[in-house]
Length: 143
Image (cartoon, rainbow, N blue to C red; front, side, top):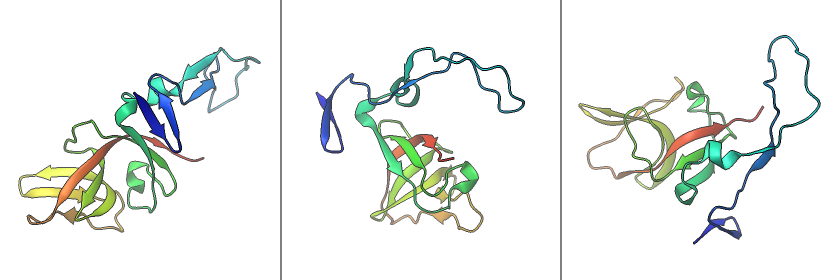
């Protein structure tokens, strides 16, 4: 069975992301003597994606999740097979509208919590239609 990636279909097990890896850590403080070579390749799929058949990348717009380290223009790796739990960052569909928020399950109901004080939390009314589309597992942040 293949996986659709944009206009392409890839066979299961095909690596989408393979990059060179440095054999030594690179200091973020004072410089250290660096090696002039790389130690082969690593497959980013192995590090970033647990189940390629249920994992998607979504681009973030807006700044309501900045407190969680998620900024406008970032990409989230979202797994649709994971069970959302209290505290998960989720892609939710509330009354037909997509949003990225932190899921809070309280004694009084479900809350979609923003991570920016400029935005109010969304208390999900009892008659609203809410579904969790997927759980964010990684944020690919631009530098």
